[in-house]
Amino acid sequence: MRIGQLAQLTGADIQTIRFYERERLLPLPNRQANGYRAYEAEHVERLLFIRRCRSFGMSLEEIAVLQSFQAQPQQPCAAVNALLDSHIAQVRTQITSLQVLEEQLVRLRRCCDNERQSLDCGILSGLVEGGSTHS
Image (cartoon, rainbow, N blue to C red; front, side):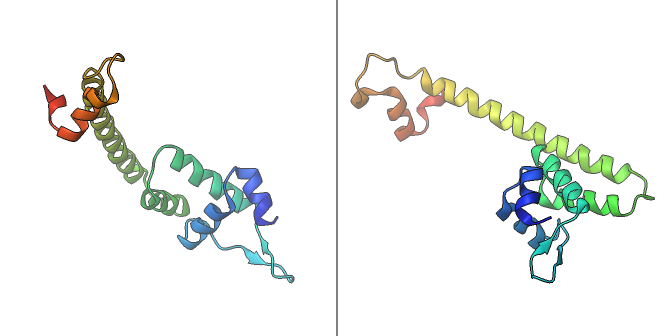
């Protein structure tokens, strides 16, 4: 199949597919006699795997590590568990950071009611002053 067909089957953008090839997450396809790239079922499977990993917020480096474990299936999965545990910890840190951000935005939003003009907007003043939303 050609790259457009691969893109359509997997929901990936053509440029994304080429990027994954450059990053060596997706193997380079064989070339047909006419020079077109010929993608196989393996490319579909690998690309869907990459897309699933990305949907979980995994980095390209994490995906490469997981792919290396796929390539060596005799290895114990303890390292895979450790990678996922590390990723879970990163997600929890991001959640905490987002909760702090939400609190700051809610405090900032309380600085202004809808009856003011933008000249007197507490939100704009809070953004300019930088510290008044922490009270």
